[in-house]
Length: 418
Image (tube, rainbow, N blue to C red):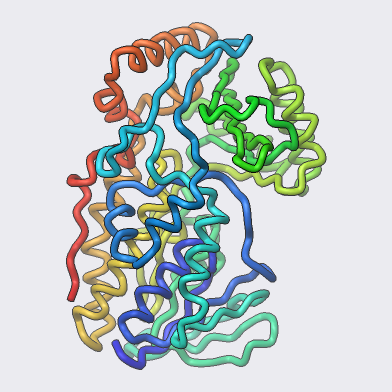
């Protein structure tokens, strides 16, 4: 792969990971990011199964992730007065994790770790405040892609263009010749993340979650720095797609309108929602989005390819970060394996990553019922089942019904490359 000229769009997690592996194989990589700087904060993400295997192949990454972990020691669902129904803790076994990951880290922290691991590499160049304006490649002859940019970077030819810019990827639409939303599959759920200055759990390292009817959940965790991180997750019935329309309409109007919509939607939830919603209105790190999956008929077209959420966002299953790390590793491995035959390398990448995608995107029928029941009866039943599972220690059995990301790492093998 020596001398291969590659353009990567996106500098969150998939982008720097892809740059790491491609540069390691000898490619010259340019990474562009449409924001003027790395985005910090964001929600907590987990590294599991195949993601752990790849992480351990990246020198120093496992130690860096542990050093920046959220330090959460368990999770519990609570009553209105804060009394827990039970606590589920990590297993201590990174190959068979519980609902609480051994490697939970804020998305922004993981992004910075990967950026710091790659920015000093002479084969990797980062350009911020830039994005692709157009791409042109021959439909008949396999050859370089001519790329133009929106903010002044000189047009250039690249042997390969990799889209790593998230589920709503603009680059995907350009590369596959489709509309931006064509490959997006709604889960009819949305989430919001923000921090509040108060440590409402008084330093507890056990995260707490509370549910209200109509699929509304609020979860709070204490940050080691002395404040609280809040997650609001609303899971609408999957047979009522119109339920997410109001969220999309508010989102289209900007953060102020979206905050007002969420505050109104959660106004009668109870527990600690009042203080959370009050602080949300002034939050500077507020982020909210619809939870979606991305399903494409193919991951590449000519010399264009998708990695991470841009090609296979996992949605509710919790496997997005692990898929991004695995995808970056496998793409570089297959390109190296096929020594100069980019077409064969991209075909190999698709063949190797597809089984992982299929497993990690599988949403079990009961997942929304477990995470956010719609009725008071459903909440009561879930809470008591949770209490039983926590008391008996039957976490391994129960989590099989949550999603592929909570499975045994041995069920998610990754190829070995020279």
